[in-house]
Length: 173
Length: 206
Image 1 (cartoon, each protein chain N blue to C red):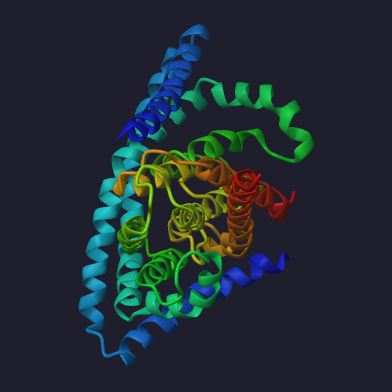
Image 2 (cartoon, each protein chain N blue to C red; image 1 turned 90 degrees about the vertical axis):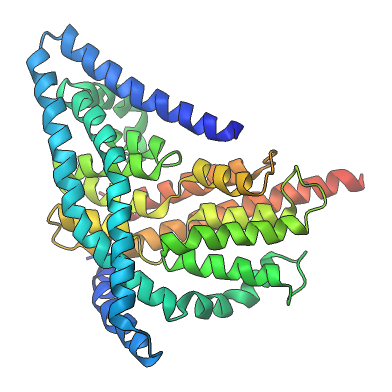
């Protein structure tokens, strides 16, 4: 088994051991903090819902009428030599624009292929390792009123491309 | 403002194309009932998915709040401050802006989504105070944006939640590879940043 995947197994249980312990040692109102944060998490989920709905309906329709299969057939000769499954392309294209939109596409891939399939694992790593580049640029530069962007967009795209390539290599076949 | 419109338009295009070609293929291939069924199945599925995710998102939100209040971003910030000071040679090592940059980096690294954006915007504002040309991102602002866009995160919580929702045997399996890939991506962004600035400097000297 890939040692990187093995390392992943321990993180969540250790986190649930360490974080409450740390909070306890710092004498936090542990329970109250958790409740307040959980409320925030619920709101995040509610805000996410319309994005998920929009993306899942669009991609569901496109898939059901054979669009994804068609796209895959067109792109396969181009991407095959690099070991990139064509079904990942919509996710890779949407990811720099919209995190919630990309999450909808990720859910669609999980539903069709399963989260533990090759495509499911690759999509997980791609989503987990790339950022919403254009969104970050817009929000961060917009917040301080800077209009020019110099080379930042190029650097952001380089980050997404390299992370994508490494993901393809790591997940392998 | 202008760029917000640009992202909106790109999403309009992607979403619109998916719908348009999806519906068109349904019509052309003479399978309207397949299209109809898919649309309503997907709408229903989206709500089932969102409701199913609420539990994990709430759980995660609670845990993240404890991390936040226990001062974990501050610890991470202190840990990485020497390294960050090297990435921002234009900032004096004890300047408060560097502290804000480190805090934002810490929150991002811990995956504290709700805390990371306000901290990041605060860092941007402090860097902007030092910016001589307010319409053009300073060298420090560029480097900081590269760090954020690199997306270095220890725990991609949303993906794990979604994988759990779809009954993955090991929801956290993507964590290690994602960390390595995101590290490579961040290094790539910093390299582009470094090269772009050096080229600029070289040009000026000549």
